[in-house]
Length: 174
Image (cartoon, rainbow, N blue to C red; front, side):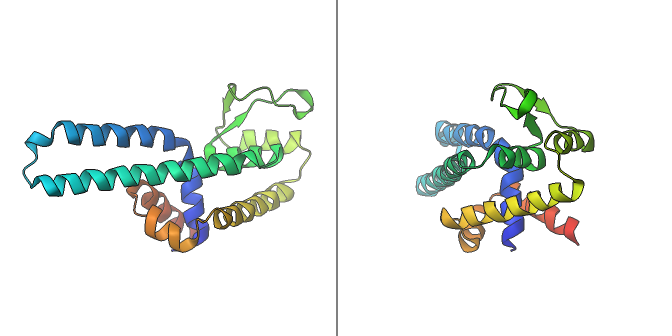
């Protein structure tokens, strides 16, 4: 697996981590409550539930680490990240001052990208260079936080939702 596409898959799915965490919690709780219907042994059910708890915890660790890393980004980097990977950007006041985290604008495509490029007085080429530098910075941040290629492959790419995005990114590249 390629580290760049692993990181991109995580970035594209990051906005859904909170919902996925809730879904895991509900799934674990339902399995435990409905354990009387389980056809296998109690031991195998307990192992399954423990495994799901560990998977949920692993995602929570990743989300917390990313939250902390994103706080270290500049405003410009945050906007670039939100625009490319999260599908939304913050509304901005005149002069580029942050209007507030609670106010979001849905980004629909190139018109919004062009608006951001114009607001920051970038050229199209400089925008893409900044995006490439940001991706490299994020990949370095992943490595510093201990999320190396091997760790991502072994512990995080086992999640089907991440594998699906990864497969899409790899197929798109070809």
